[in-house]
Amino acid sequence: VISPLGIAEWHSASRDIMGTRITLTFWEDDTQRASDISQTVFAEFTRLDQLLSPYIASSELSRINREAAKGPINISVEVMRLLDKALYFGKLTDGAFDISFASLGRFYNYREGQKPTAEQWQIFRAAIDYRKIQLDRKQGTVFFAHPKLAIDLGGIAKGYAVDKAIEILDQQGITNASISAGGDSRLLGDKQGKPWVVGIKHPRAAKDNANDSNTALILLLSNTAISTSGDYERYFMDPDSGERIHHIIKPQSGRSASGVMSVSILGAQGFDTDPLSTSVFVMGVDRGLALINRLPGFDAVIIDSRGKVHYSQGLVAP
Ligand code: ADP
Image (cartoon, rainbow, N blue to C red; front, top):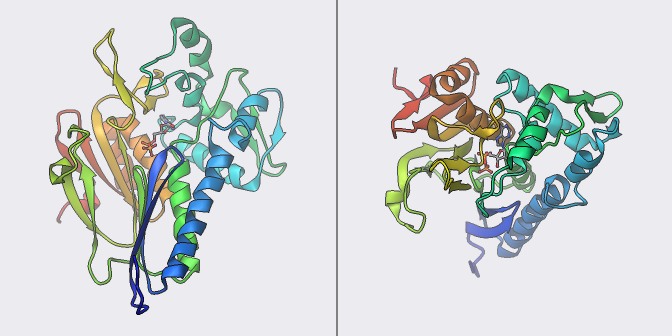
């Protein structure tokens, strides 16, 4: 956007990082400055991808997966924070959120339509157990107390990254911004006196349909994080069973979680809303709503497998 008079206006930029489309919009009067800020935000996403991606052999996450079952290994303060948070949600959700889902889950390939073989199933299924991920916070180490355990931070990394992006914008004096990384969004301030309009996708909308009929419902929001987990993002239809195989795994079974199609969680930070959306997806409508209703500062919108919409108490008019 060109602003020769230096009039404040919206700046928007998008990039594909962390396996998803990152979109950033913010209000700023200096075009050059806006461009520099965008670069800084995208550089932060790239840094986190290099740190946390399971597809990058040199990432810290890949190193942990190669070495942590052999003995305690040192990890960075930042990854310790992420693991600590992930294990906190493991405990809070009684194992619905479990980053060791990847022990078996890494053998699903949604793009190629592949699932674990019977043999992989037998070997790796038993390695799913977040309680076998042992952190020594004082020593700064992690140890996997199961030889086949592997972790993936796909259920928390993007929410964390979105928070880091907002931190950068805030430090730069930006007061109105929206950032989304796939299903994880966060809003800073409002849209210049109006709320931000955030649509929750219809989970069965046609993929190539780019108009409004894609939207199941609309929320008017400001200053909040919102994370959505859906069974329509990464999936394939199993030719054997005809079932939808998607990327949210029920740790107890090692299979795709069923019962709901979409879960959106509202809260202050992506670091919490991202893992909570995955958690509630696994827990289902009743247990999921019960969890959100007892956590102060969070709300949920759940679309169940029949298309019925359920709201947490905070979203229902008194
Ligand atoms: P995204 O933000 O990638 O669209 P979600 O926030 O819905 O996705 O999280 C789904 C991701 O979380 C999966 O791609 C996977 O990496 C990870 N995941 C899947 N099942 C679980 C689980 N039970 N516990 C923790 N993480 C999970």
